[in-house]
Length: 314
Image 1 (tube, rainbow, N blue to C red):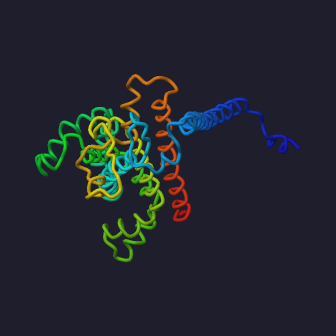
Image 2: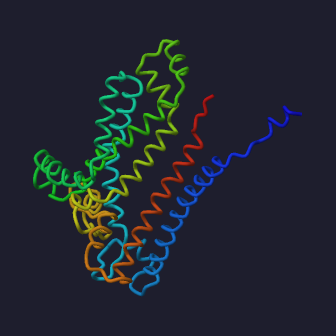
Image 3: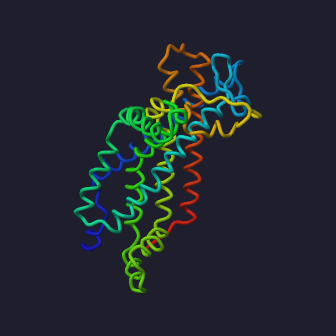
């Protein structure tokens, strides 16, 4: 009987308080997300219900000129995609290679040197990256490719610098995924005569595929949502286009000309004298809602991919 009494669950008020605080923190994060979505949807609905704009025009028109009531989102979307794709071309291979080196090759001393450098890159304000793109990367591209090819404001230099900005994010998350692969898989690979490189690329990398994919999607979302770099270096004014023009796709996909992204446009017009509840003011929330839908779609696709190819180790 005394033994049974000693095994009875004891009340621990401290644990109950901690559990309650953790629940409140989780609930606040969910409520914050719901509040953001509600506000975006409410203000965007005012935009689409106005006489000057409509959802059909928003999704089909190829011109964005609020001054003449043209509200087609595609010029802003294409500039955003151009910048983001350029950033991914820079960040994904460099960040993944860095992660493989730190996880499989670097000594503790070298890792202790490289990691703080990456943390410094992650801690630099994005406005500094923006002026770096404008004052260093753009002149470098103009000196290499020619002044007539590369404009002063262009999406290429902004995309390259955004890629540099998110390299620490890619490398850090990818390294965590590589570290999660059990050492027994490496030892088994070495036991059958595989080299270090073969083990890294054919055993460790596939074993961490789901985590690396998640790192890539988070980095892509970060690139799409970057604001200050593209606002400073990419240019002000969307690349409006009309189907049927000569060399259409060569123009809209040209990364060396100016192009205003979705976040850059929000920064530019929200800093002006916009009257509350005007069509220009409400268009900011419509663009923000479009950004939210894009990033949400990326995350849903990522979760499905990770769930399909996730490796579970015991």
